[in-house]
Amino acid sequence: MSGFEKRQDVADVTRLECGICWTIYDPTDGDGVAQIEPRTPFAALPEDWRCPNCDSPKSKFMATES
Image (spheres, rainbow, N blue to C red):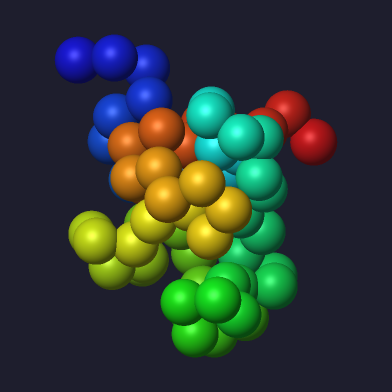
């Protein structure tokens, strides 16, 4: 298992960054492209959710430090 898998372990307010294109998923904002409501934690995103910029799967996202 790589370090990119199973991002269920992050806090609801944690921002995550795509390891491919560096796009940030911020739960405060949600994802307008995929019609994900603001305040949606990363763990609550559908399993088939993809990066809105490069189409990478959720497994490519990692927690940011800030």
